[in-house]
Image 1 (cartoon, rainbow, N blue to C red):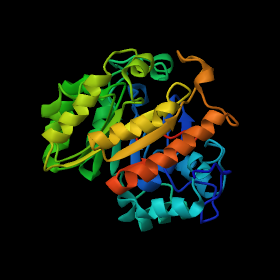
Image 2 (tube, rainbow, N blue to C red):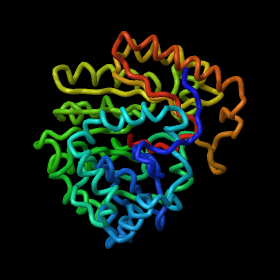
Image 3 (cartoon, rainbow, N blue to C red):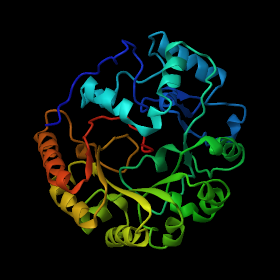
Image 4 (cartoon, one colour):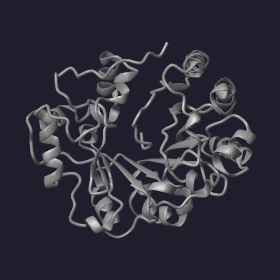
Length: 353
C-alpha cells in the first residue's frame, strides 16, 4: 500500500535531495541544481538569457553551495517523492539509476565538497520544443502560464554544445511532434547517427503520421499522455475526439519498431473524473503491451479550465480508492513485466522524468 509520509532528509544528513525533481525559480526560468546530481539539464527556452549558463554559471554555483551548506531557501519545501517512498527506497533508486551509476563518485564529490564549477557534463538534455499543441487539455497550465515560443537561437546552440556528452535527449512541448520538421533536423544533426536514446513526451495524436520518424531511432522512449480509458472522458480532458487514434498509434509504434530498443510509457492523470477508470486503464495498458505506467495527480492552478473540485484532496475517500486501485494495478501488471510508478500526491515532479 502506498503511504504518504512527511519529507525526510537524505542519508548524508543534508537538506538537498537525492533525486532531480525539486526546482527553483530564477528570472522566469526553471533552475534545477538537484538535477545536476544525475547530470540532467533542461535547456533554457528564452534567448533573452543568452549569457545565462544553467550548468556552471554564477547563479547555479550559488544554488549548489546553498544546498551543500544545508540551506534550502532556493527550493520548494521538502521532496514530493519522500512523501510516498521511504529513504531506503529512494537511495536504491538513486544508486540504481544507470544515468547516475557511472558518475556517482564524481557527482557526490562535486556536491559534498561544494565545488563551485562542475567538472562533469550533463548526460541528459531536455529540450522544450515550444508551446504549440494540437490539444486543449483542461488540466494543462501551458496555455495560461507560458508565452508562445519555439526553441531557437542561443538555446539550440547551447544544446548542440552538449550533445556529444549526452546519452539521452528528451523532447517535450507543448506537443513536440507538432515540431516534427524542426525535430528531424536536430535529430539528424546530432542524435540519430550517434545512437543516443531519444525520449519524446507526447499526447500521441501525431504518432501514426510520424511513424517513419519514430522508426529511425536506435533507442526510443515514447511517453504518451492518454489519461483515461474511454473516448468520452478523453474528449472532456483533451478537447479533441482522438482517443482511438492515440490507442492505435501506440499499437503501430510497437509493430513498427520490432527488433529495436523501445520503451512505451502510458500516463494517466488522477482526478475525480478519472480515478474510477484506473482498473480499465490498467487492462488497456496490458492489452497494448506497454512497458510502464505513470499515475499523476492533478496539479490545479487558478487559471486552469477545470474546476478545483476535480482535485482529490486529503481526506477524500476517492483519494484512498485511487491508491488502492493503483496498488491493484501494480500487482496485476507485475507478472507482465510492466512497471508502475507509485502515485505521488502533490508532486512537483517535472514531466521530463
